[in-house]
Length: 86
Length: 358
Image (cartoon, rainbow over the protein chains, first blue to last red):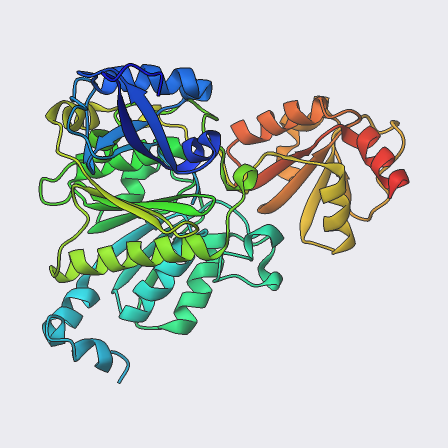
């Protein structure tokens, strides 16, 4: 409740190892308004430092996003690493 | 008759069965994904199935690699798969490639196939398969797994996106754990491999909607499932077209780890698994390995005595502390012999200690 009202809480769904680091697939991440995927990557990496050495893609509302995709109207953000096993 | 239930489907019919009979599918990897995919493709009457796998069956494969039995341990997976699938459906032409797909053999192996299925466990190999398929104009069905979760997609199909369009950046070697490190529930590759077979059949038959441009991610443990849409990225397609396939030397990942520890070796010996043992210490070095048929070739003589090595199978290389054995392994690998080579971690010293403990 002490957080400035301008911050927006985003719903994340994490897959693979990222879900394990985060402690489960469903997570929330708070970002300032106007944030883009690049900002999300920075914030996510602060929270889960393992992401610094991880290749992963970000999808916004089940569509692959780029670093400059805006998150303002995002309902769900997915963090997707490639899987290695077969 | 064999295909009656499938021919009865309105969008398959006799024409569809003929399409399946004429189709040539290349399965890269006869492991957790490859086994179920191959079983369904062979059962469906796909005319030609090529199977690429340089690995040998291990006990730890059997919980998920459903084509193999305990009697197959130590045998090449592609060759065992061919035997099993032939018994299932002798109509299918089965072509084993008992080798790992790499930049040197990829174009030779894939020539003449219509669809490639990626069932490898090596992130590097996925870029090789992608670039190969882009260069040859072949669609490929991708599958990969992590613990309880899996991903499936169809790439390079009808001008759709490629693997690089989804994951442009190649992960660093060892960035992701393989099945041996991460663990995997046996049924999970069964689910994903079966979806891959289904996508391949749809491509051959030209029916339904494929996962081209869509990545299906499923986590049956939590029942989280998403379908992520992505577009073709011309820059990445050009990269795949221009890629030098010869630069790909895939890592050896799941179940192809190149070291074996003393406990594992003792277990293999106790079970009388079919392995070959090579001791590269000087002939006077003690203690000797007290099992029959240990080949002794001191490291210094190995380069001129490679012809004494077994022609195939799994070769465990032993020295005193596990250092010379690594050099011996490099030497044998460079000679390109069709052997699976493991070096005994910590050498005889570790083996003796481990034996005393047990």
